[in-house]
Length: 177
Image 1 (cartoon, one colour):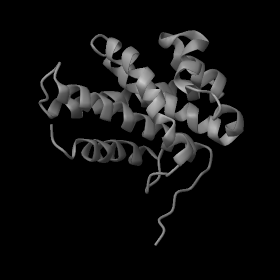
Image 2: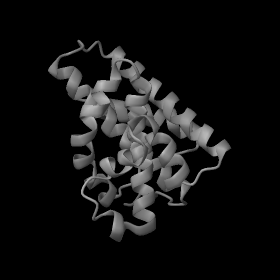
Image 3: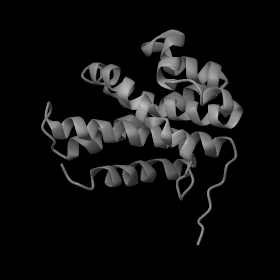
Image 4: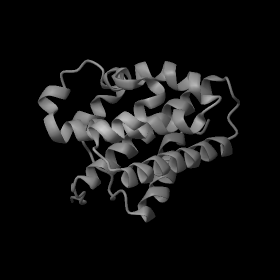
C-alpha cells in the first residue's frame, strides 16, 4: 500500500465533494470531533468490516453520517454529548446498525425527506467513489494492507461528514497565515 494512501484518498474525496458545494477548503479543524474518532473507530470496525463484503457503500458511507452527527452534537450540546463514552454505540443503539443512517438524518440532523434523500445519495456516491479509489490501488483483499486501507477510508469519510455538517451549519473555513 502506498504510504501516501490516506492523503491521496483525502484529496480524492475533496475533489469529489468540492464541486458539489458541500465542503469548503481548507477542510475544517475541529479537535473535539476529531478526537472522538479513535473510540468510534474501535467499535465501528467490527460492524463495518462485517458489512463490507455485501454492502460496501453502507460500510463506507455510515462513517460519513456518523461524522455529520458528531459535528451536530458538537454544535448543539457538546457539554452533554462529549461525556458519552462512545458516540457510535450511542447512535447504533437507537435503531441498530442497518437503520443508523435514517436515525441520524431524521433525529439528529432533523432533515426533511428531500434533504434526507440528497444526503443519503451523497453518502452513497461518495462511498462508491472511495471504493473505486481503493480498488485502483490494487490492494490484495484480506491482507494487513487491505485492513489499513479500510481504516483510512472510514476515517476520511468520518472527516468528510464532519466537514459537510460544519459547512451546512454555517461554519466558514478560511486560510490563516
